[in-house]
Image (cartoon, rainbow, N blue to C red):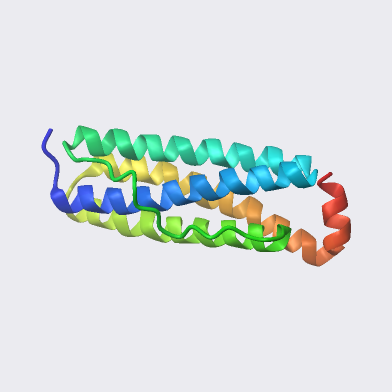
Length: 155
């Protein structure tokens, strides 16, 4: 089914964020594993898998609309250097993804592509209610209990 080129471009722009998030989570999960923070490694490895699923859905939809997925571009990738900066960087990319999802959903609504909009709504729910919420909780927990106590709890 030949899709709207503007929507395909927006889906590819969104894919750039999802791929960046996927790459960032992958690197961060490996850093956590290397440092011995097994709980963080496990959770962030799970987030990597979620992002891979999001990217897969976008790729499938782009292909269905007869577009070509852009697998090269990454937008928002920022690897942290310690646990707080990694969590903050992951949260920043989740906020960017949520904003891009909302923007793309509005375009889909305008162009009456309700199937794409509904697919993106599921991704938005996962992004805001799971990924971003968990990261916000971790950053708050560091403020409440202090970084050393937080890190000890993640071993």
